[in-house]
Length: 342
Image (cartoon, rainbow, N blue to C red):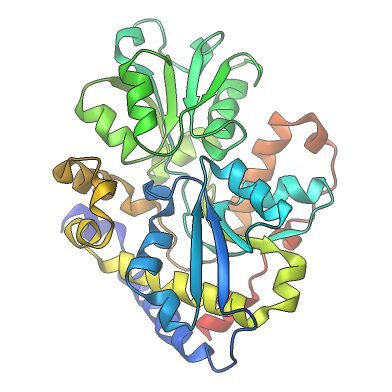
């Protein structure tokens, strides 16, 4: 039995297959808004692979939706676009739903895409002798997709756990694509907190020393002590209330993508995504996909323990959240996943 077969248990695969197959039956009611604008912060990243699969395999069209995808420089920017009204939905980090609730903004996730963050924190290879753990990040320049995004929050959490303050380093936005590779190659950053395929490219070049790896369940537990959901589909609550059929179809399409990923080979993934996502190195992209397959959600449901883990992380990082009253039940609307699975 190979690693892929070990990672995808037959029970989980069967459940997800059933959910996705039934999702297609939940499209009887016409979408209130067939044209939807969706924001994402670094679409080529494997963190957002389910979105690309839903797009490229035509699952949005099968659900009667025309989805206009806006790719921003990081998750924080796509969140800003949602708040500002320039997009209807976002594929982004679950943690934003908690942050926004504390600010009085009702943002809710409707489908989990990633059950592990899949974020890797690594030191520049020529600095590896002096940067051996997060405790050594003080005063360093750390490359993240964008300040305030999940890559930044994860590395800040690692710093706090190591006894530092989340402001003890300089965080530099390097974007979601080749910019992260270039920044490390040029010596513009000392540490990188990023995702595949950027991490796989840097590893292949021998440019980094990996310190923390949340692409796997073991690595996620090592940092967070348990599960920690990553990418989700989230929207404003008023949009969900006004457009339930549209939201259902968005969820249906993403569940189809998760089902497909649960049995797809890395080669099939590479053939499906745009060639430029390979960063000029298809074999390396295949390796990156293999590294990330474990991280994708099997059911679309955010586990309660994962929600609590993210809240605990944010309370440690943000003084405003430390005392804030947060209703985790209001951060995830599970009606659509359940309906697609019934």
